[in-house]
Amino acid sequence: MSDFYNFVKTFFSTNESTDNTKYSSAGHTFHFNTDDAEGIYWFYEGNNFTIDIHDVFIKKEIIHTSFAGLDNFYSFYSSYLVTANGESFNPYQNLSSNSLYVINTKNAENHKFILHKNSPYLGIGINFKQSMIDDYLSSYKNKVCNYEDLFFNTSTITNKPLGKIAKDILNCKMVSPAAEIFFESKAKEWLSITIDSFLNKYNNPISISDNVALKNVVDYIDDHYATSISQKTLEKISAMSGTKLKKLFKQKYQCTITEYTQRRRMNMAEILLLNSSLKIQDIAEAVGYSSHSKFSTCFKKYKGLYPKDIKKYSSKNTPVSDCVRDKK
Image (cartoon, rainbow, N blue to C red; front, side):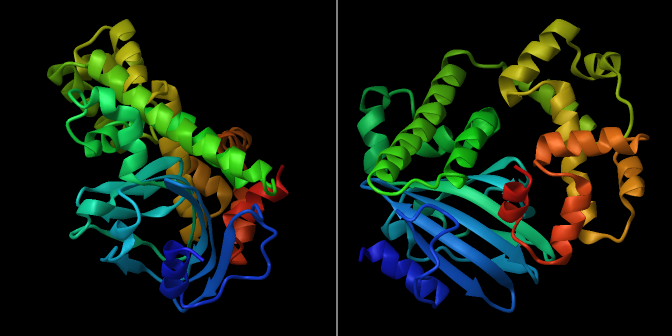
C-alpha cells in the first residue's frame, strides 16, 4: 500500500473497511465512529492527485488545528461542500453548503477550522501534487504569481461548475479499469476549470472600485436576505446601472443576484432545520418565504431534498449522501 494509504490508516486509527460498496470499489473506504464524529472517509489515489469524500455527521464541535504530514503528499486541496456548517481560518473561509473549501497544504502551519455540532459534513475534494499543476502551467508562469492565487481567487467563480464534477464523483459506481479513466478525467477537468477561470479573470479584470461595490452589494444581501430587496436599492448601493450590476455580479460570482439570495436563504434554512426545534413553516418565514410550498420547492432545488427530509435524517444521524441518494 502507498504512503498516503498508511497515513490515512494512522490518522483515523482504523483499518480499511471490507464494506466498500457505497462509493466506487476502485477507491478505499474507512469507517470511523468517535465521540466527536462518525462516518466515512473514501479516497482514490492517482499518479499526481487523490480524490476523496468526507461523508460525516459531526456530533460535537470539532476544532482542528493541524494538518501535519499532509504536505508530504500534496500541495493544494480543493473541496466542494455539498453540506457543511463551520469556519476555516488563515485565511478565513465560511464552510457552508454549496461552497468551495481550499487549503494550501504547503503553507498550513496556522490553518485551523471549526465544524459545529449536530450537523452533517459532505465534501468531495481533490488533492493536487504541485507537479501536476506545473505540467499544465509551465507556459503561464509569468501570469500565475503563485498557486494560492489560482485556487483561492477563483473559488467563487468555479463553485458552480466544480459542484457538478463533485456530484459526478459522488455518484460514480464504476469499477476498475473504467473508474481509473473516469477519476483521472475528473481531476483534470477540475484543474482545467480552475485554470481557465483564473486566466479569464486575469485577462478580464474587474476594477478595484467595482469589486468594492460588488462586495457592498453582497454584504447587504447577506444582512437582508430575509427581506424583499429591490433591484433599485442594489443599483444605488453599487452606483451602477442595472445592466452593469447584473453583468459584473454574474462575472464575479457565477450566478445571478436572485440565485445568490436564494442560496443564502437556503443555507440559513438548512442550519435552522439541523439545529433548532422550529417548525418548517416558521423556518420558511424566518428566511423570507410566506409560502411553505414555494420554500420547499426552492430548498429542493438548491439542496437536493425537501426540508422535511433534512429534519428526518438529521434526527437519525444519517449521512447526507444517503438523503441525496434516497431522493433520486
